[in-house]
Image (cartoon, rainbow, N blue to C red; front, side, top):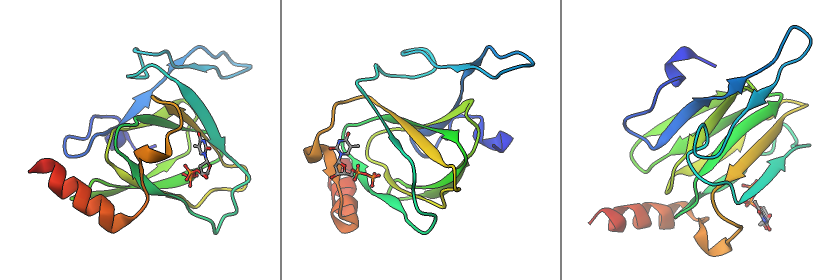
Length: 146
Ligand code: TYD
């Protein structure tokens, strides 16, 4: 991952997190703990895998959910959009996580063959927390700021 991603983004509520590393010459071992590297208590995990390279996922924002994305195998790209700015981040290092705050639209695409995206989530699954229509998302963001 590029070094410039190793800092808090001031304009969007995302950041790259570096995990603890306890590996040796025989094996790598990365660790992330709640309220240390992960800035919330983890209530749920899920993972995306066997994703066809031409498939894209996501296409939604969450009103209250915070997440950390980790490419535990292979690589994938994440397009992030907060209604004002867009960023594309390539995840490919298992010792790094991408924190995504609330109200950020994301598309996930370009999975490598062995790509596995682990997601740590701050809340249990709640379909009502999703905004799945981009126009509704833009309206929600606009009205939220008034
Ligand atoms: P979705 O979050 O839209 O997946 P992606 O971001 O990869 O496009 O979820 C896909 C389907 O799985 C949707 O029908 C909701 C369901 N689902 C759950 O039931 N529980 C969960 O924790 C998640 C993440 C999804």
